[in-house]
Length: 295
Image (cartoon, rainbow, N blue to C red; front, top):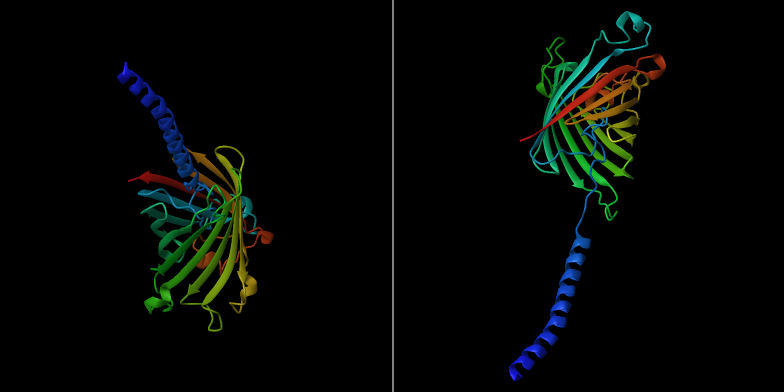
């Protein structure tokens, strides 16, 4: 009987202590959960808005293949019905592969038929926006090196260094809610070869892009590039880049359809030397199609 009483008293004291320890453990787990960092995803649906690179990097060990196509002028004096509003061309074509080594780092290679440029790029996500707004923006760096393999028609490419150009970008973006994202691109372009001796080899520009999601699969996009400073003697013939489009997601593909006034897709070309204007009817229909593969 005495032994039974001792066991009963022991259990009576042990059960509250165990319950207290369990509550303390649950509180610790809840505190740990509250300290876990959750990052904002899908600020933009793809690694490009249209021509402009977005802050996005595909998932780890993911290969993205992208086809970028730009048709000819739609509404100039020599276009219209005669060229099926630019569908007859001439066209610009860019093929690219980007491989993500991690969620924050990717390497890529691309080739455009405009001046036969082959480009290599590295992209790194420096900061990531959090759901708690402890970090309010995403910051990504993009570096690109271009080299042309165009035939040396007028001896301008005798020196291989003259074939090269470089692009650096700091890309800052914020996803304000599930439907609206906004981005700013700080762009630096250096061209080893320029048209005139008085031209500047280095120039800067500000790009901005946005996305408004209409439903689960469709979004409206827009982007604009403003060129800074006096960098060319004939700068008045060049125009700022402007594009308006729509994103359509279908499973593993993302279709981006848009109207823009730029012919090329490479920043070293369309940022400093775009000679097309919306006001002159030099509007071009274009599209990007991307496909992601998990490797």
